[in-house]
Image (cartoon, rainbow, N blue to C red):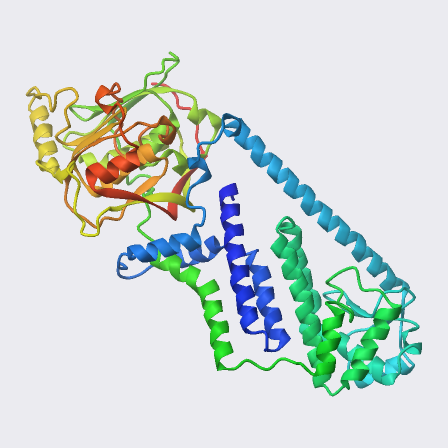
Length: 610
């Protein structure tokens, strides 16, 4: 989980707490136990990111394609599921925060969090051992006035009653095998009716499993110790659980004034438990509790309006993120297809040599006759080429795959399909580099390529293709097979008839589909770009923009790379690529998150030269 994901989760959880605070305000006249469970749900939300719920929804596969999500829905979904829509990586950080500086910053933050978490847990462990020592030093109560009342309440089979010589108030200790800790001399201070009321209060805690839920919230407090709302939720939980037990005691028939007097006497002679997971009788705002008990102000059961409000909130909090994940799931960008050994197309011959020149120039090209020629390339760049991936879609593997350089020449069969090039590359890497990989799906930031105008109108630099590139490639392959010299496809600086030309601040292509255009834009945006235009056919385009090297990866990831051309003086004062896509192509790059297939390199071996 990245720092950006943590910030998103904290913001989303804060919104949920605010919504639940309003909900409990609307349900203030209902039973306290209803509000208690609502606050407990707010606590658990800190342990369940919305991203986990949307990922569950994204796993649903539909028999038929879902309709495109309306733009206004997309905006609302983004506002909830991605409050911090600008990735931290997209912010121009100071030099001290880049590279190693950024790693040091994250390390400092993680260290501070770890120290805070350890401090909270240490304090609670010390207090737990203090109460535990009192329990172990105590003796079971097996007879006497208190034991008789305890038995009449039917509690002797529920948990042991242990006498304590400490000043701690009566309290339930333990989660798996709870024990009721009872001050040894309290029965000399309370009469039978008051002892009965105090025992009834503690048994209400046991039946409600308040020890377990309080322990769960203590875990939330330890993990999110820095968030003030977490501690505020803890206060609300203690308040509502004590009110719920008060309501239960009075409901069982105890006189309010007797019960109130028993609480006040307990507070007079004994101290509250140091742990919220050891519920006693004196917690919460004592003055307000006594006022409610004496005034008989007890909550009512939920009516139709309250139930509707509660169900609506639960649906919005839990079901909505799952539905969002299902509705917004799109065809996964660059879905990886791992070919089975022995069935994939392959090159007829291939030579692999180590390049030790140290030259900066990298070259990859396909020459007439189906020869793939590459020099000074890394295995990582070849993996991205073979699987049509961006830089951040490749993970794992030994360090040398990113640094060692190779020269490769590979011959394809005459008349072989150009679309099988990637699968041939996969076979080559498997056979010569013993490459072993697997895929994982990760939730990553992407850009959705959509029309800027609601009517789907195109910009001036995006026009229908003038040439059928499939037929064009077939004719040139036939010409080369006959041994006829090929005429140049274009002049230097001219837009290619078919294919893509990349330059510093310039993109131009011919006969490209919207999907291919999106893949090309991915090279310059720092994220996967997914076609969401729902437009078929091929297009010619010309795009000029202010080139930002910081957004581009280490090389193109979709299709054959082309050596970049020198900077074009005509681009002086050009706009960003995002503005250029909008103004020149009539399209828009919409920030979203989506499941993205990532190729994980399990192992690879340096090849034997030939």
